Image (cartoon, rainbow, N blue to C red; front, side, top):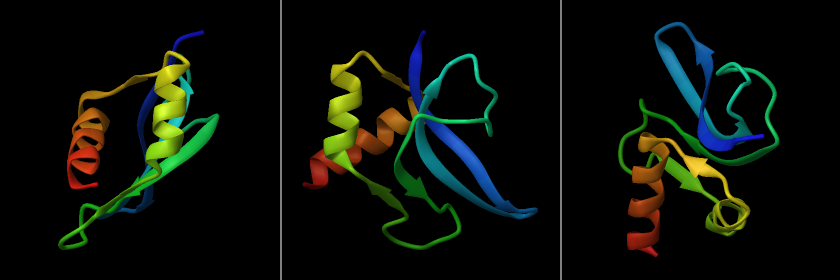
Length: 81
């Protein structure tokens, strides 16, 4: 099983809202997930990403790979803390 950390789209049409989730890579984008590690709201100004870095570190330690977008969020969050 290949585990990935990626975005899961929620919200209404023209009003997207994303959850950053840990899931099996074979599951569809908005399908089931193992754990939620953060949120991303592209419509919000300023700090629009919230991440639980402890959970992210734990999952990456277990072999989870982050998507490009989520990896950039993780880099920014680590830089800020």
